[in-house]
Amino acid sequence: MLTKHTGSPEKRHQKKSVPSGTFADLDDIPTLPLPSTQLQFPQVTEHELQDAINKLPNKKAAGPDKTPNELLKIAKDTITPSLLKIISACLKIHHFPPNGKKIS
Image (cartoon, rainbow, N blue to C red; front, side, top):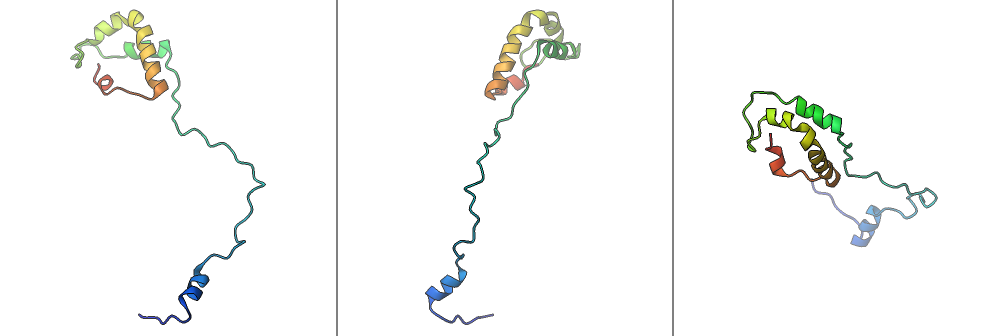
């Protein structure tokens, strides 16, 4: 359907523009800080890490690192402090190495 425009292009444009003074004055409303967009992960405790190691299944094939779960359980008291530092650092900087997903 064709419609006929009347008037000059300037007048047609004026009809489409938003009238001034339409928007509310927001100067009296305080600006609130935006929440952080980064995810916050809780710290992993030594107890939680040792509990996770204890729950690893026995007599399963070792993963790509060739470390059997039984060895991790035997060495848990020795390896927990180092693993905890690594896990905490990864959570703090939001970096999770791809190879870490392959470790058994």
